[in-house]
Length: 449
Image (cartoon, rainbow, N blue to C red; front, side, top):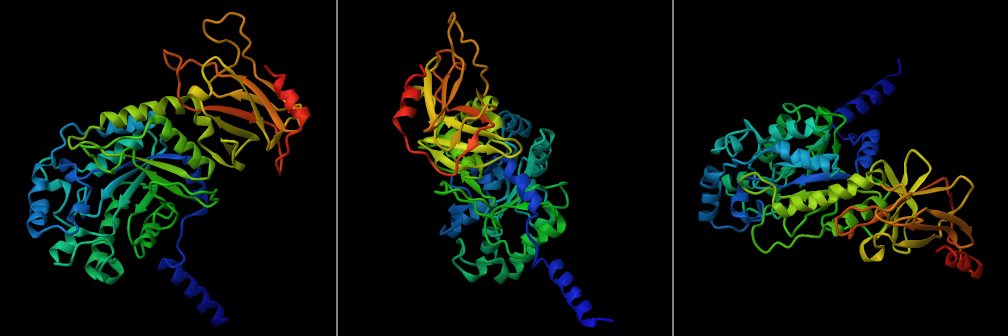
């Protein structure tokens, strides 16, 4: 009997079971990359104050902390909370997964936990918000994700440890036995009592916790703590490994009642396009009001995004980066399962309704089977215009693939749709390098009117 081999095998099994070799399942990472667009929700009991979520505890006086921990939860009663409304709006906007703040840094738990009295059940509301959110989004077939902070300011406060973010050895669970035990108990509750959880976002040290998560639910995808998750910025280049960009609509993650200018819908749609062109997912945040309603500014933006996604969703899901993610100010993605490329063209003043526009795509070449269409538009008729030729024309040139098309779909009453238009190009040849412009090609383009 080969005892060395048996010992080595047992060692491998032991190491794997202890989580040292644990990681995201590769197939599940591919599934995650297909999702493309998700809803982040930052909400906790301190939304009543419109204060930065959790962080106001850091550096606070004992008086402030005492009132924050013991008095503020007594007035949390979101009587307009309706997670079905949240989920329906997310579905309409094209969001394929949700990430909800089950526990932020304050340590306040938004579920019925047995680990601490600092939780939503000890408020006038007295309902398990995590369960209601999970149930509502699951009904809409939206993948379920939870945000969890391994840091816990309430535990630090109770143990007279200075409150801050990773500024003291005892801020780290691996150095703080009580904190690690609390976190592990809470992860066990979240991953045992609420069915299948698809995504877990650890906002803080994840060692000893993500391994437990994979043990409890092997198909869970850990985002922050395991992959790149930039906040409020996008990488400058394509990243082939899975990644997720997290953005606010305004300046804060939580509800902020004052001085909070929001991004435009066009800005957010362009962020979604650039994120997908570079291979990532966009996790777009909402900060519900203290009464549980979505802010009207954020609802309005989500509905603008919903219209764009209703027309162009094919170009967002199940796509991967193209050879050149951006060319001459056009972003590109490529369908994963067919020979189709999507090109995002700025609308608004750059391409008004009813106007013909000519394009040259240097990375592509025409074949007899090449087809071009505008997503959502059949390019046959344009409203109120008799005998208008709005057909799509394509041609071969030394420049690349030449396309001439009319922006002909009326989406707003005044014909002014400010957001990008998407071209779908199928069965084109993809070139490895860009071709220099020459006179012959220029003449061809000029002739397409």
